[in-house]
Amino acid sequence: MSASPAGKNLQPKINPRFLPVIDRVLIAGLQLGPAGKLEAINKVLQLVPEWKRGDCWRRIRQLRRMSVVAGPEAQPKAQTAKRKNQDRVVPRQRSCPWTSEDDDRLLNWAGYEPVNKIAQRLGRSVRAVRFRLGALGISAKVSDGWSQRKLRKLLRVSPARLKHFIGAGRSIAESCRTK
Image 1 (spheres, rainbow, N blue to C red):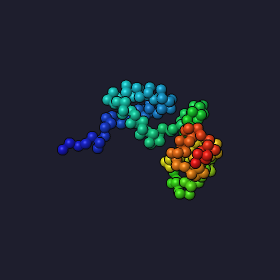
Image 2 (spheres, rainbow, N blue to C red; image 1 turned 180 degrees about the vertical axis):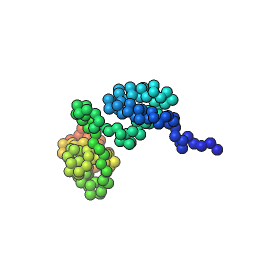
Image 3 (cartoon, one colour; image 1 turned 135 degrees about the horizontal axis):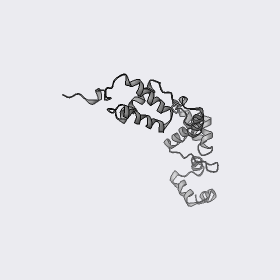
Image 4 (cartoon, rainbow, N blue to C red; image 1 turned 90 degrees about the vertical axis):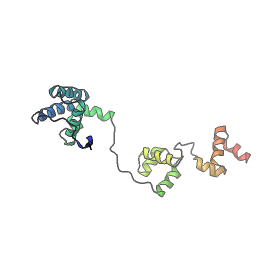
């Protein structure tokens, strides 16, 4: 039975003396940005013809894992300041499960308050609140201080009937008179 390729080391063996040189070239290229990375990979491919681009990228990942290559700290300060404005990536926090109390508060505010205000009150992200509202089948849209749920209760109509009223452009007074 043949051995599976997943268990083998797919990176070609090279002389260990060359590895520090390759690492220095790759690290220098990483610090120069995307164009420098490609240039460094091309240099490595010239130095070690038996390697392929995938081998270079694998080595770059290994260097990053060993934290030989620092992330944004290795770049000049001018570049990091420019990137801060472009990339506003916030590290993901562990999510808290939604409790029934959170759902009740969310349902009470949905349709009355803007989503960003609800998120602030619940201590959650705007995206999490929007996602939860969608999961509950409720619109996050604020419509003149009336939520569709409250309006349905006031008029004592079904959701489909209320949507029909809204779609037809009927006012609340007309809706009450037809009842």
